Image (cartoon, rainbow, N blue to C red):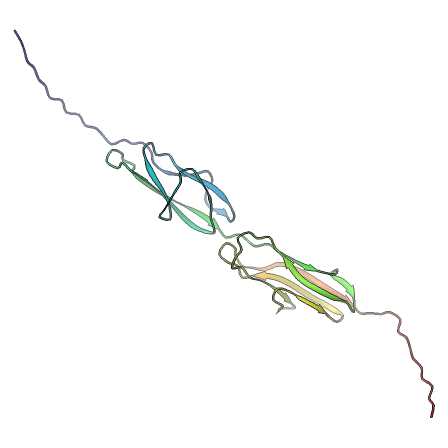
Length: 193
């Protein structure tokens, strides 16, 4: 006897629950200038985006101040539950640093010419303007001047820019110029007629 038996089996194939998320090696927020890595742990092919632009997986990010959106989209959404994920990374504005400089000391005796200026090493500070004030009057980027005896308050500030916050008092210095008390020569003239 030959028997021919056929059976039909029905199987349900569920979508994979494999994770597919955006990951960072640092916790947001960070202050400018800060580098970090971004990647995805997707187990199948995917595309990683930063603000809508494709980037390389496990890439170093050197970004300006702002909120940056990172999105991963898995290429196969039919077989995976987790097909897309987004996460923001915030780079906060830094506080700019700078120092007032002077070609002489900050205390001297009249008369002496002095050049007041500043130095700063703030990376990525394009668009940031630095201003020097003497007794609350703007002197732009500095001045080369001979001042009379007295006390003068210099302040370096900035209104900030794309990567830096405003800083009304980056540096403050007091210039003290003493009166010249050196011996004076008297002249006597004979009166002749």
